Image 1 (cartoon, chains in turn blue, yellow):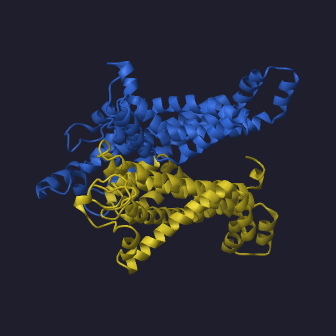
Image 2 (image 1 turned 30 degrees about the horizontal axis):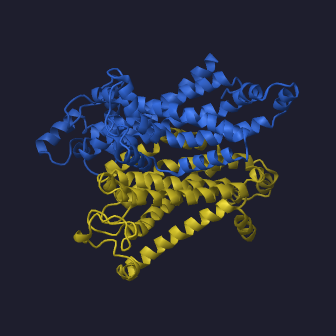
Image 3 (image 1 turned 90 degrees about the vertical axis):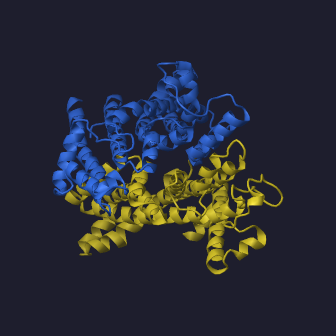
Length: 313
Length: 290
């Protein structure tokens, strides 16, 4: 197991190098002067010269990349042009909001989707199965930013019972924080809930047809023991992998959801930075997203190795 | 084969619904292209209103007999703009899926067939791209390259070719050890001929399913970029941009936010229903499974 974890960590190194290279090249390979891309078009020639020196833009790009990497490894993502504060500080302040949103979205979606998937499989071809399947299908087709707007319309305008904008820290007021996160989390988690419902249903149907389930039933075990102890445990292995891998999908979705609900996470930060032409922040946020995503995927792979001992790549 | 698929489709109710939705959307898109190119928006004014002409005395009118879906902030008819928006959605979706499918197929074929260094390089690039959430990579590209239809298409294709490449690679790895592929090698066929003539036609089924379902995803992503103000530029009507304009008036003009979203939802649903149907037809293991 340890050698598997070490091997999996080593495999991550070239991916991390590739990620950093791509994020670095975003600014440097596109047409136009990277100095202008970094500080914006409204600058004097003196300021451009200063930026070129500061960012070593007159050096070969490999040297520039190595200098930039050295800064990143020290946790120095540069300075925001608009707010004039270190980008790492901005990221640290905003990342917890995004992680709370994605975490809460995942919890809500799993709380809905796994029971829905189980009911759908156990009561195959009944009304409840059909309802679950229709909702799961609709959940995949619905754009999350539109769902968010519709939830604001219903719970903020027609029946104003939930807060629809802003963020409250759970440290200051936990129940209010949950209330503020509820609609954004439902918005973000719907697609995942739909996917997990479908996967749980199909995996459980497959497992319920296996011989060991028939044997469990033949032994006279009660149906709930057969389903929850024998079938569901085995059916959940592929579902857990998908859930883990979908964390990245949730992170991506948070960009739009944070914009709709005005949540001060890193998704909102990247969108605001785009409009203020604060390119170093855009670069920093993209890098941060990719790093978090890669580390979560690594964690999922390792967990999967624990859950299913047959998995050794 | 086509006739047989068509016959099966007619028995597959969800597939029929999906196909109808696609036919309606494609017709709307073709209509707007013809109307704009050859008739200078005169055709649509015979049945509805010009989607570009402003009428400030009609601004923010709720749905009524004259404007079935209401009007926007500048008094433009929403239904006319939604019909015109179908063109942008399908154009971006088809181009992005076409480009990513084409690039992914070629790279997947090379990776799967030649293996070794080529495989390692292509798959490592794929791993790096997969580390970025799709919408974020597209957002970053459009930020640095600028908005507009071409850049949106490139931005959406940047990462999505990876799924096609992975599918084709997997198929090639399976097919290249089949007897007919080995026989083609034995009789001295060139690598290109083996790949294009023998391997590719047998590897296409999952690709077709992925492309159909991918179209829905592309339409949502393109609308997402437009929603953030980084997609197609005004005055071209796009569903995402209409939603963005609408959400600012959600308390006073709810209809601005409802109809463009329904248009996206129905279109995506159409492609996904047809995708589900194609998967059932093209994958023999799923034919009797629901």
